[in-house]
Image 1 (cartoon, rainbow, N blue to C red):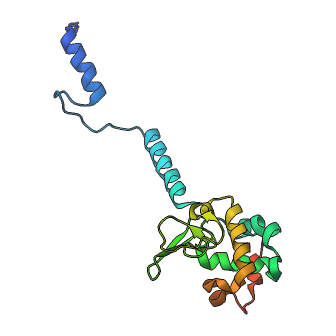
Image 2 (tube, rainbow, N blue to C red):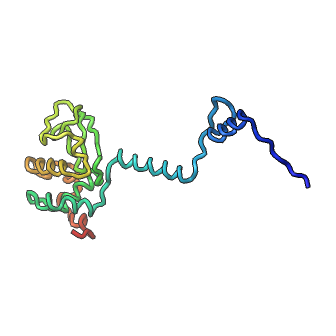
Length: 185
């Protein structure tokens, strides 16, 4: 029986073989795309998804939003919790990082309540901004809602809930109880 015995490679050949295995090419200075395993692809995808969530903020579920604001806003100045939930639904879709640019006065609405930078917060770019809530607009986009709730209370104290166009168009005079339906509060 004939047996084939492989001769040992010299050092240069071994080094090239290791390099080809590592980089994916035998040509100097030429690198092939890595062949990521399935696990690496999954990790990469999860990383991109988490980055997307970070950039776009948290979109709260309706009942979760209601639970978060109930203690601070339910009944504030006679405004029911259902009205606040309706307002947030139509202003931001419950997205804490929502923004909406208003080209007319070059202001921007920020956060879950879409609070305007011309009157209520400072974004550093709105001309002649008043900053009635004394906050940076980015604070109105925080997921904990603390500054957004404080500012919303100030707006209601000065102008009423009718200050929000979406509330006037979608919630005022309507049965808003549906916005709390199914929520265990």
